[in-house]
Image (cartoon, rainbow, N blue to C red; front, side, top):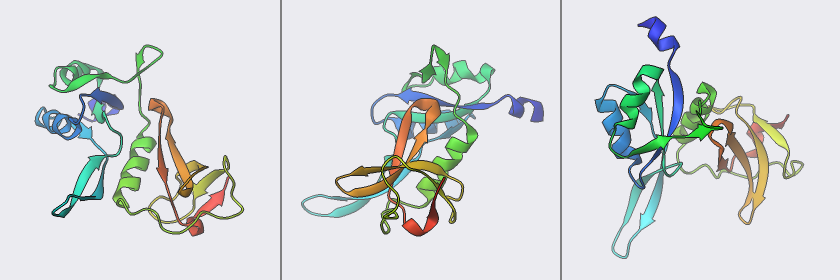
Length: 171
């Protein structure tokens, strides 16, 4: 079993619209490890407010499988295909999965303070404390202020997070 575990890798899947949680459930029922990063947000309707969970990356589910299990994944309802880079199934580095898990564990309310004034757009930064210690990203700006952008290179996606300046250092 330990030998089989060594050959497993994380891969990203494209899934049908709004089927991320369902696909992950079906994969888990097949005995496969699946991960959907979910964030909570408050939604307002005319008669009520409710906290709801949404996928951090719409249309993506991450799966930890070996080559023999890859076909089993494709036979799952809602799975469109593997994310591919240059025709090959993209491998997601374990540290990218860990970074996402750490970001999600902080909860949706990540906008706590401002990024250092001396940091400017494009600067590479590293988180030097908290649960995110070691996560690297780049400073980006938009109309809401400055963010750190954590890039998931293996699938060409990024996640923007507003973090307190106290935990960031220039790299």
